[in-house]
Length: 59
Image (cartoon, rainbow, N blue to C red):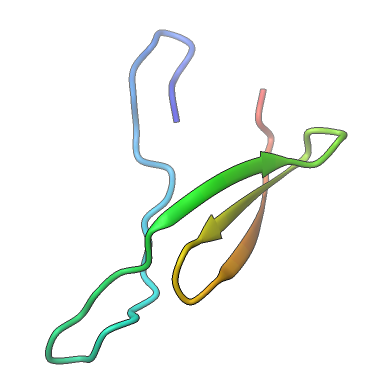
């Protein structure tokens, strides 16, 4: 995310291990979209094809 002062901060981290416990690999975020009313952000994880819904406030 970005604060109103333009500072960048982490707002999400992929924790879905698509590898093994010995050799972990983390899913890649591949896209973001918002619901028409702007209250929900949908983010896709490329592998294994998971979509997450995250609620805000976003403004």
